[in-house]
Length: 474
Image (cartoon, rainbow, N blue to C red):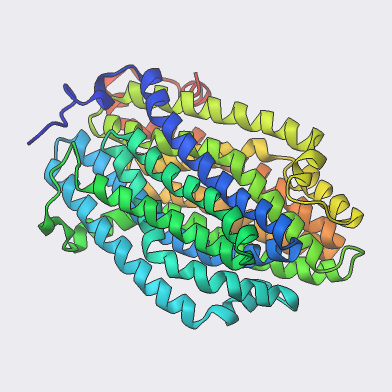
């Protein structure tokens, strides 16, 4: 059954602006709601347990990010692989990619469940838990890791469901999980009195419902016929999935390393400041969660258009690829500029949502918003350009761009600036890395734009390289 030719597949025929809206809006809603329910955890824990509970969830976050990194590697890699194969008219290869992804997701979830349960306390210490925070972190983490086998399905399968031309189904699955969690959070934390453990159980149940819905969707694919034999891992297919998804993996792993280093630096330099060790960890954790809510809009747009980019690049409809990229880049940058204004003007209003603490806590939290997020408008440059390269099957530049913000710029900036200026220097590392990585991503695309569409270039009259590069956004 070949229903994926360019003539009948809307990815290759429908107006690009309409396609971007149809695919990006559900993806944005999914990721925003996902970020919202992460924030809701923080709000309810802050109100019901206090800032020590929020600090504990920040300790567990790196473990969740590791698992998310693996799931995104398989899910985004399979989505890019599937879109490229459908664009080339190869539904059998696309189906094998989806099947291999499913097996890899479930297997990795079980492996990490066992690993993290055995090593939970040492990992909590590694990620910055000290004193009272350690008890809360172990209580929360012991439960959270139980959900990893279903968590990976919720993270990974949504991408291939979008690539199947069903962005709304991908959105619904995410909404089911998020809404379940938001309903159960206050019940388990306040009514049952379970504290951080209640928040963890609410999260797991939401992930379970999300995974069940996505499994049903995987059994009812529209563009490919998924069979049992496709679930058997094939070295070449799995390798291609991993290579295409590697940039997503390293982005999340880099985030894990950053948080581990950042938490330990917060404890070290916070203890030397008037704020103490616990306030900086809790305040910066809330700042990052709020930032993730806004950046999830940009990520939703970028990941939502990935199937459009991949399909049209595979079918050699290069004008549609360019137009889709320009639309998504422009919208994402505009959103982050608006967010910058909100973060600078209304930080107190945002912070108060998470609970009223001491004046010192409020003072440092405001400082976090105004300094750490100062250059957030540059984040879409790396995000959109990285996913663009991933979508067209070029993992190397995608990986380089994805790693630049956190590994190349943020970690050195944190270590150097905190050594010079203490806790304030740690905050200034944020805008420094955002600005430098954004500029690097634009330069990479600037230099490589002409070579991306090499076949098209040979069919047209030669152009002046500088002019073509200068005009790639126009």
